[in-house]
Amino acid sequence: MLNELKREGIDTTQATVSRDLQEMGFIKVRVGRGVYKYEVLEKPSEVLLWNRLKVLFGNFVTDIKSTDNLILIKTSPGNANGVASLIDGMERKEILGTIAGDDTILIVADTEEHRKDIEQDFQELL
Image (cartoon, rainbow, N blue to C red; front, top):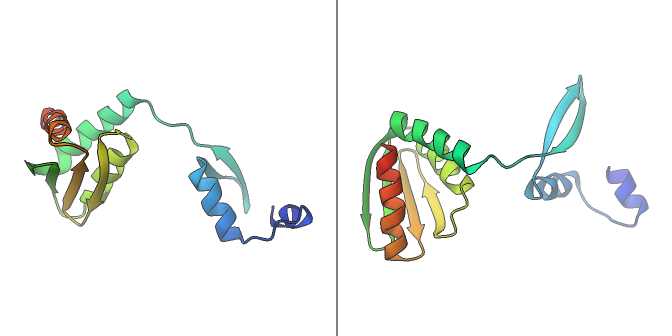
């Protein structure tokens, strides 16, 4: 791929190409020994994401607290990143972002009103 880009006058690195493809929704799939191809990663449905989140909340989330526009989710050790990644994958526009440590997730909502809605949704998953 790099050689073809170079022939077109585009000088780049494999790391840059890989990162750009990932950002566009492509994944690298092994099709044989040492042979890979890129495929478009289909976004899971919202229902599938909620079902996965319900399983993770049921197994790993131990507490949910909030204040203002912030939600703090406590998980069992080592599980905050997985839960936060799934929350990010839901792409709720009212969630500005998440920060995950080992057993703690901080969710920043865009408003206090939306924080209440998000928190209620998460409480129902427990």
